[in-house]
Amino acid sequence: MAQDIVPIELGLTQGDVVTLWAPRWREEGEEWEAFLGHEEDLYAFPDAAHLAAFVRTAEEHDLTDHPAWHAVPGLSVGELSPDDNHQFDLVGVPELVSEDPDTWVIGELADVISIVRSLADVCELEKVHEILDSAEGFALLPQGTLPFTGREGAALWTEISEVVAEKWDEVLDAIDEVVTTPDVDETELKTTQEELAAFEEATAAAAAASADEDDDEDDEEPTGFWAEVGIDPIKIISGAGEYYTLRCYLDEDPLFLGRKGKIDVFGSPRALARFVVEADDTDLAEVSTWGELVVKATGGDLDVEVDPDNVYVLTGLDEDIADGPDAVDPTQLDLVVELLEDAADWAKDDSVKVALNQSESLGWLVSYVLKPDPTRLAPSAPFDAEVTAWRELVAAFEDRLRIH
Image 1 (cartoon, rainbow, N blue to C red):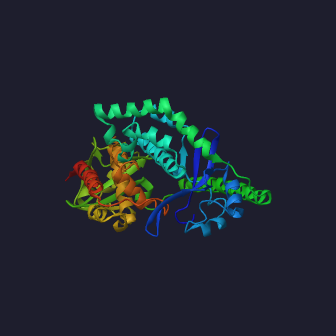
Image 2: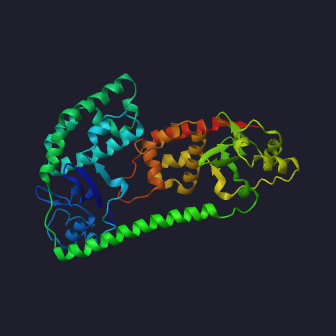
Image 3: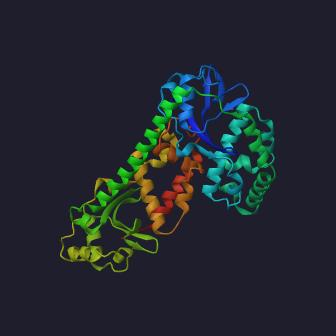
């Protein structure tokens, strides 16, 4: 996709439509934001084929002066198809606010309200601003779940729900009034419709191939003792020291060497092997191959070798986060996030998922690092809140470690 011009999907009363959005950019000292349209009209199309046919042939609209527009007419239909992160269901807002304000509901609502405010800014929809400004909670959505906890938070959520129930139709009507679908070149449309069909077919084929690959991987015979038993030695490097333990996945659910949310860890592979001999009070004993480890350990033949993909370095990430997302090593972060999520899932604790949801400031930063997208706004300094939240997650994980 062209830098800073993004295909988006809007769920409106007329159905799902696609258009282009240029998030805020600076040019000659001024800040701008725009959508595909002209004068008072917002251009929207029933699918990416119509959108592509338009941008390849149209000469006059509000995005022609954007510094990246020159690249857009050359984009494929697939590149002009909105991804999951840029699909906004405006008509679904009443149903959304009827749910409890958990991190996923608030995250989705925050995204919708953000794009609605952008539409109101660009299209000069003062009525929409008035409605969104009538409930304090709309402005607090980017802060995540915190403002909506407790009695005061419940009141904020109730106020949002009431405003939506009474006035959301007015928001939709205001946007509907500026939406129009311009004519497109019929010859070009035939070409783009063929491209869209080919893109959808290729996407479906890729999904099927991926599923087959997963099946093939499942069918492959494991190699080596640890692969055969389906249990992995892992190494954890934290500020408190370096430790070894075991983890496996049972029906895709993580299991650690430990019990009741506490992970048994050891300062050396030899100490871990000795522990296995008598470790019957552990969740890993539920695994059918556990006995094979015990036999190996009892005979002194259990060689604890840690694959590089199972080495988790917790140290230094908090300092990198303090310096901003560009300072964070995505590979290190990805591994540590995997470890934190696995341990929390095993302990039936959803605090990690909540903290790393994109509606939370830390979750937004982590997502920005692990899923780079040039069209997304970068998290802005200072990163004190993100550092604090990250350190709390790491401290909670380290509290789970039962050091032997």
